[in-house]
Amino acid sequence: MTAPEPAPKRHDQQPSSKWCFVCGVENVCGLQLRFFDDGPGGVITRVTLGDTYQSYPGMAHGGILATIMDETLGRAVLSGGDPNEPRFMFTARMEIRYRRPVPLHEEFTARGRVEKDRGRLVTARGEIVLADGTVAVEAEATLAEIPAGQIEQMKMQDVGWQVYP
Image 1 (cartoon, rainbow, N blue to C red):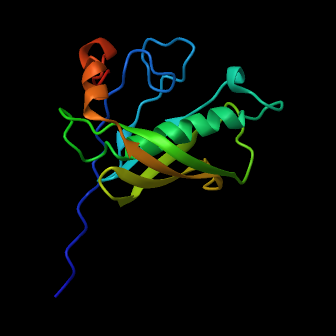
Image 2: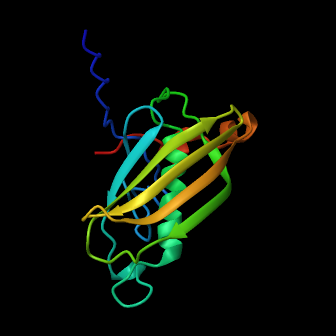
């Protein structure tokens, strides 16, 4: 008897907003990243940063990399969920480990995955991986549930939360 094949990973695009610094499609000062499900509880995005996001010459600023990891870890919670009832969470704590500089003008991948889901609190981990497979940044976060009343006040239609082409 052979083991069943694992279920294929789905790479559906996640919704974006209009003005978020990371995913906002109308934020000309932002990153305008697109995120894709990477199996249940997992998310992936591909990023190429230009000179605007420079720290030391030719290298991406660590604060921008932390911002990308913050969004990526939060979006891991959205993967595999009901797109009509997204599960938004605040980052309560995040720890970053910078292993290697991330060069500008070269594509890298940011991945996040849910490690532990305790309902109101979630632990997620992720990394930024360079084109050659080197892990440049590692992150772990504790995410906290946003109270329902606050989510209702966000006026989702005004935020523009949808999948954009």
